[in-house]
Length: 410
Length: 80
Image (cartoon, rainbow over all chains, first blue to last red):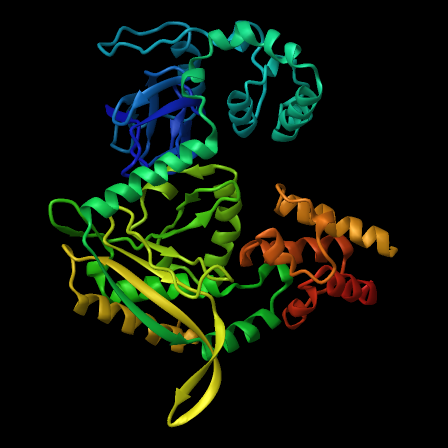
């Protein structure tokens, strides 16, 4: 039996609230299936399972906050001969498992029933539920306009506008009883505040524990920009590439050449086999999210761009998956675009490096004894001096520059 | 589509990208991205949204013409 635990989605995460089970006892699980939605300081995260099995038993009820490492569910692995369960059998198992609770040694963590579950279950999207909880909206009073009458984000927002316009008394009176029973209320600090705290914790730890060293290199972007211009001519507006997609691929390839930077520092340097590039996404309300582009070294530039088109809006809507938050092996920050010519990053522990791309801009450059105007970018590397020395950092910067000078090879 | 309708559409799309800002406060010659704090990713999403909504093709070399409200309006009026 596999104990499926509350994952750690970063050095700064201590606990999470199980918001919704997406799989029920008896459900057949395959690699990458999303089992549950968990509310963390980084928003509502979809927790995935990486294996094959059958969900045997849920040990934590929806709405309950538990520390990292708590067993959330028991999963019976499949795959071995004889243990394979026929898919047809799964729904039957599900029906049996719900009403009759088999005796187990694990004590089920119970919580007071949420008001909405007393009667008919209200259909609501996870994001809408999250906002409703944060803003203390009584969802039983909200009319859903989503699929099958489900409450969606827009409905909650509409309700919030109405609440603001209504006399204050009404807002307080109605949901009071409901919220006394809401286990989530205890953690109902504003989302931006929660993210601020998460960033503060991770960055403080980084600055205290990691002796950073820094390198900086100005890189010629003429060839890369010319390549992008040509590439974008052939693409529809929806498929167009941004320079950052090139940066991500070039960094991934450079890490393949200099694997000591694609690593974590945990009782010594531990190299990682996969190259998963964490990409800093700034949130308009303040704070950052760092979702990972998994196996970036194996993806084409178009695939990386498609990945960004998918992941950035989800990061901003606090709708990421556990693997995207927990598996990055190196980080890129690209504050450029008017914000700064250069950015010196702070390493996200336990990683050992972060590369920063400034604004791509035209500058006077000396080339073969002549001064010319070229697009350039200032690239910085901050690396953990416990893990590597400047020589390794220098090799990485040289490799990165080499790839950016040969965009077609990416 | 008249000028007012184009402007209304632009404001709607900008509001979607930068909900905390009021696009109607934009000055005609102000850089939209700087004023509304829009990064390159959102800028591309804005171009995609305009292309789809107004059914115009905006090639990459014309991005410079979309920088301010005044230039964007003039550009779209010619295209539609």
